Amino acid sequence: MVKGCFWMRTGDHTFERRLRLGGPLLKENIATMVLESPFYGQRRPMLQRGAKLLCVSDLLLLGRVTIEEARSLLYWLDTEAGFGKMGVCGLSMGGVHAAMVGSLHPKPIATLPFLSPHSAVVAFCEGILKHATAWEALREDLAEKTAMSLEEVRERMRNVLSLTDVTRFPNPKNPNAVIFVAATDDGYIPKHSVLELQRAWPGSEVRWVTGGHVSSFLLHNGEFRKAIVDGLNRLQWKDSSL
Image (cartoon, rainbow, N blue to C red; front, side, top):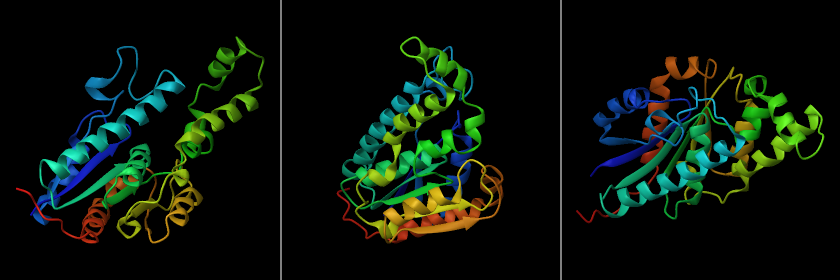
């Protein structure tokens, strides 16, 4: 019987990196399905350059659509494709989406957020990305309605992005099958954010790899694959209808 792992990733406009990680898992009888999220690859708006979203609302829309599409695909894997075990995996902000999907899925699945914060607030208002956000443009846009300082704009952003706080979501059906993999020197995702979600989901596990947000993933593929295998192994087989 086949196990399936469903992949989401931030900043990946192709399938190559995720398939490169998932390909060797075939030896473990684990198939990989990769989603091209809205605003990426062939689904990227014409005026958008790379992964730089044009509007704050695009970030929320990206997340909502990704989550709903992932839930639909997991339902298909479960009811139509007959997979014996399933997991959802994501890297960076894709890991936040994976955590949300794992939280909302009605049945136990392995949930594997890699190099992920507990909320987009951390990434955009605390990590390195705060230096890449067009705060002045946001202030000017809001100034059409009311005058605001840059600090007030940042606080407004925190309030909006608090909608992505995964600690406010329900606990997954099987927290024991939740494995976070985080990096020791991640400039995007501080350690406290990873531990905050782990505390919110008692029974979940955090594993640490050395390196930064990118180098840790490039240098420790084996550790990420092991987390996928271990998470799926913590689930019980279900009867296949096929």
